[in-house]
Image 1: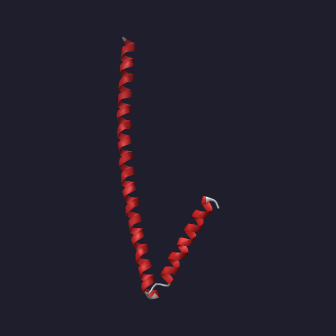
Image 2: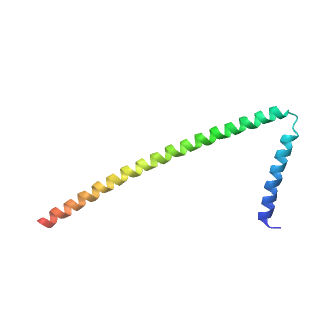
Image 3: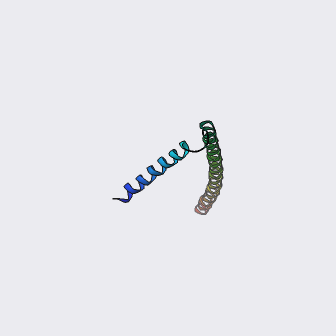
Length: 89
């Protein structure tokens, strides 16, 4: 048996076990649905917070790159101007 097939079977088995556990839990269907809904909402909140954090960090990186690009551009323009002045003399 290949490792890929074993892993796929393990994942499917885990999912089936989780679903069976939820369905056979001592809680009522209404309580289980409420628990699943709250869990889904919490997951969405965490995902939203993570996306916002990543976006903020990406914005910071882009801003830093723009600043560094501007600095390099200014230095290059200064060198070009200096070369032009030296060539004129």
